[in-house]
Image (cartoon, rainbow, N blue to C red; front, side, top):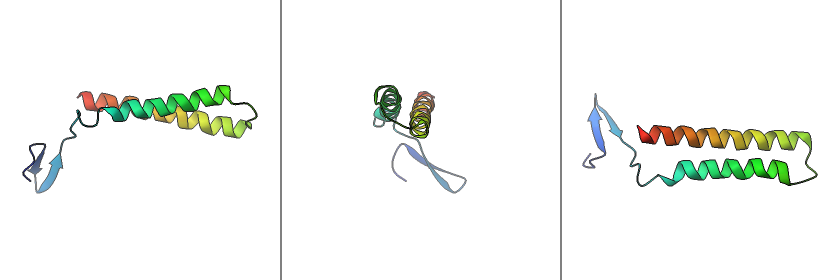
Length: 74
């Protein structure tokens, strides 16, 4: 592997994530989650099941965005 972000360790090719190229990803995930949570509150005529599933998707997206952001900082 010739890329400076990649190396071979114990016969396995390992590559670091270029955090500058993918810095948008955690913020996009958190934005999608925020939009989902706002839609739960703003859009009327949703069943409780729809509200619950949209809340779970929104919360999971925000948590995943925060996790990937913290991983990229290390």
